[in-house]
Image 1 (cartoon, rainbow, N blue to C red):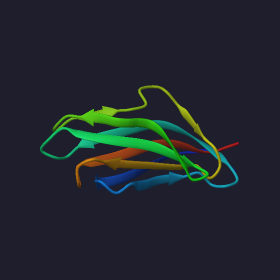
Image 2 (image 1 turned 30 degrees about the horizontal axis):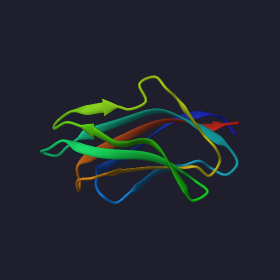
Image 3 (image 1 turned 45 degrees about the horizontal axis):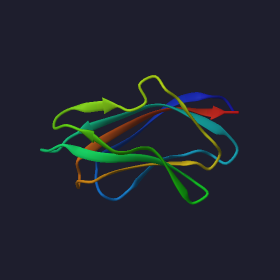
Image 4 (image 1 turned 135 degrees about the horizontal axis):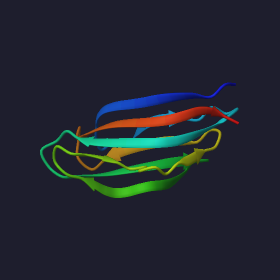
Length: 108
């Protein structure tokens, strides 16, 4: 399997967790970027977490992005995603954030 850079996007994420990416069972991936844009009229707390074997591990929990702004959560850091890891995002306010993840997929 060859490696490739991919984006995963979701518009107006709210209080229900959105599955942004699932690592294929035969490979790994690297999360290299996570941009959160506030599209609401107030400051928004949000969570990014990885589900491994049914257990949630938070990358950020309750992190806030102010009205009309965005935040790059990774800021040069990288997270290795093992096979079958699931990256999820949710907000504490309905339809309040747009999310873009940058991922290097097909890593062995």
